[in-house]
Image 1 (cartoon, rainbow, N blue to C red):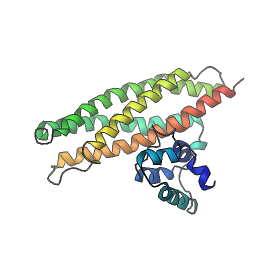
Image 2: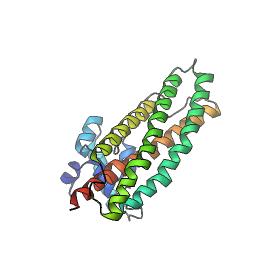
Image 3: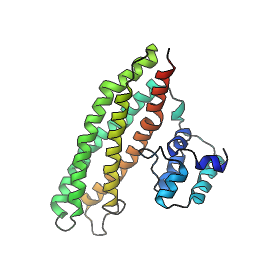
Image 4: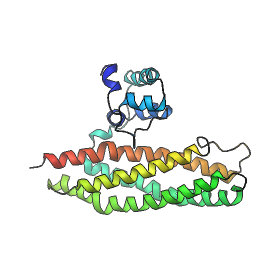
Length: 233
């Protein structure tokens, strides 16, 4: 692919074709999950990022051997199991821990650092948003996808369900972006206690996992499931 074609390619598609590019985009603060529908050019322009530098780093990947997983080629039913076993399990494990430390640190240090109250508020909203979201996927959409793939059954996947889930991911992504902006990029103050540092480490890890989680669904699973549905007779 030449440089001009790459600039007009959606960032979500770039990462779907080679997940190694996620590291490059993340390093420039470019959103490839919730904002995956924008072209690389528009994404760079909106962030006031030098696109030539991004292109240099992306092109460098072509010279390196790709030994990573090609999620874009996985069977849809296998991909749903992977998402549940890896990302859903992670969310259920980490949300209570993040909530615990957000409560504790806000209670102890909130008077000195009032942004901790804002983090706590958003963590509570995120927890409520994500738990209901996971349940909806596991009990409704993912069984629909498996039925469609395994039985070639048309009408299994409802576009309205997919749209609703994507909207929920947009809310979750926006909450994490707001959290990141409050403490200056997950960097705790120099005098932060151990709990303060653990909270920020957990938030940063949660965001990184969420980016991949949302990417696998919004940029790969959902579009391919709807395409599969359309192709069935």
